[in-house]
Length: 219
Image (cartoon, rainbow, N blue to C red; front, side, top):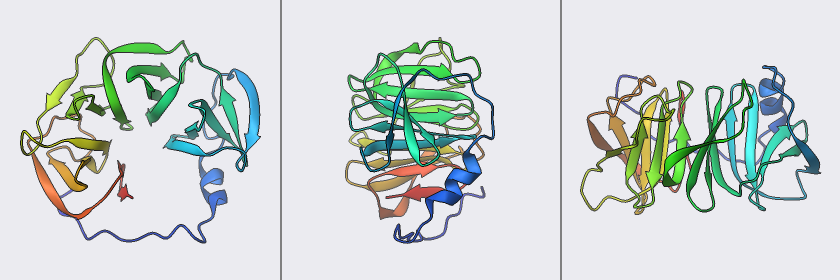
């Protein structure tokens, strides 16, 4: 939170225990009933994306379906959309379809998915429901406090030629990875303050994906 960061620490997947994660997040919050359309084991299909929120783990499978973690399996959540990527911010799921359309769903009410103006390649939401994304033109965009009707604000990269692959937002601030795998931090966004920030700072190392919450994780 003081704007200084240590070197990246490697985390090897081999030997990691999934059960600890399941025990931590499962059944912390009561949820409305889901539309159940079947279950499949972890081995039956691959996930192309996964997101963790308060008491919940959701993902997108190889068939572009929304799924929810349920013990040692994944439960399909029936929707009319084909999903590319989703993210949980507070009690809201934000999603991008395979055609780039943006929707959100409030978990506490479980009302139908609500459309949001604009198209994105990727979306990220913080626990405080600050929402950032990567536009079709691969610029960084920000929607203050998430919910419509407020429009997306374009947040210019370090140069006009900067193109983003992915954006992450959380208590550790807003982080991005560019098309040349450069890692960027948005100064002035620490603490999940829903700010546009002031300027981009280049961070040592190269990544393909990044996620921000209390800590920053990357691939």
